[in-house]
Amino acid sequence: MQTFTLNDGNKIPVIGFGTFQIPADGSTYKAVKDALNLGYRHIDTAAAYFNEREVGKAVNDSGIMRDEIFVTSKLWLQDYAYADAVKAIDKSLEKLNLDYIDLYLIHQPYGKVDEAWRAMEEAQKAGKIKSIGVSNMTVKIWNKFKDCFNVMPAVNQVEYHPMMQQKELGLLMDKNKVLIEAWAPLYQGNKLLLDNHVIKELGTKYHKTAAQIVLRFENQMGVIILPKSTHTERIKENLEIFDFSLSDDEMKTIQNLNQEKGIHNPDNPGVGEWLLANFDVHKED
View 1 (cartoon, rainbow, N blue to C red):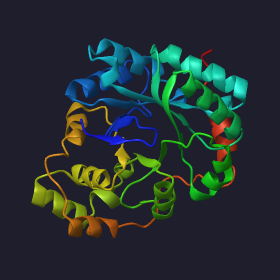
View 2 (cartoon, rainbow, N blue to C red):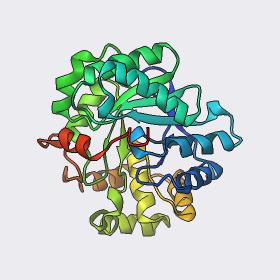
View 3 (tube, rainbow, N blue to C red):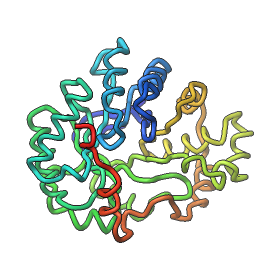
View 4 (cartoon, rainbow, N blue to C red):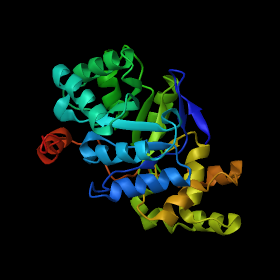
């Protein structure tokens, strides 16, 4: 598996398997086991996905050495107060049944981010977490919280796809040597992207699906990609993007599709309040 090197020196597989909205009814366990069997070595979950236990069980049951699998989880904003964050990190470790988490993220950048980040920095020093990062941070939000980073985030996981290429944010992250991770790298299957004639023509040329063209583009842009599927054949296809390369001109053509148009705007007023009202990570406690 190809890797990128994070600003802390740790290596991260360039493609991971996303588990957002896969239910914890055995479906997550099966999907993660399938992904690992097919060659994925990077699994992305979160406390607010409510499937950490199944992710951890699949990892532990895989027969693959722990140090060969990169596991990401995320702290929910319900637990950003320092003492709550300390407990939540241990809770994620317990649910995953792992000795450490490879990457742990601030999931939503609202509220007591400074306290949460301090707890994460301490957990990293203690060896509970290898790398720490953030998610859904726009330029505006980054500038609001950047002074609380004694340790620079290793990644910023944001919406990223050809229609939403995060140009301004990308320049800021490059300046700070922070890698962008793409959630919704396929625009959640939006036909505006997957039926676009540029993408489809390149698919015909390279004998690849539209999704494979998009994922290869993002990979060549230096973005970590996290496609998600519960269908074994699709999980397999999403990994088969390393046997061809897009030319510089083809990359520019896809870059020109950018509209900075996405699914979610973290800068919208009331987002943090809405998330807190609709996701309770302690409902099962």
